[in-house]
Length: 198
Image (cartoon, rainbow, N blue to C red; front, side, top):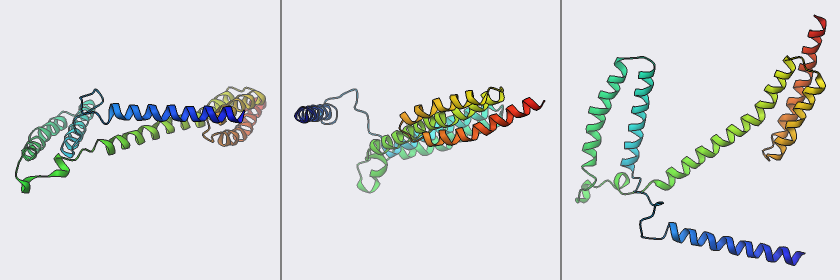
């Protein structure tokens, strides 16, 4: 059995390495144009994308709020001042003289750091959404059941069904689920007692 697992592990690792190597050669090391290749994301292009997006979003928000003069002012500032400055700055992109060159703005490709930041942002947002869903949903639904004057046993059963689910997620949320259960049981009892007294 050990030999079989060793052989399977070795074959799997070899296959994985070969696939990774092939993928790297196809995507990153070819000089042929591919759908995965992109133009360089230089500092100038980052500034242009960021300013255009932020001014467009701020204009849309101001227009949505019903303001009439503010979106026009934002459009004027972006169209005249920022647009002229960016056009003037872009004249230095194709210059041949060394003392006019700005390599950090026009020559360095910032795609990898930007991609890393975007991946980190998406990962953090996904983790927050999953954590909030599995932490808050059982507590809120348990309180809803308690407010509807369901018995303590049904609230306990409801909360206990979420603990294995959260433990199976591997996020360590089961501890908070158990803590939430100890909060919900007295709450459900108190609500049920007030209902009986009426």
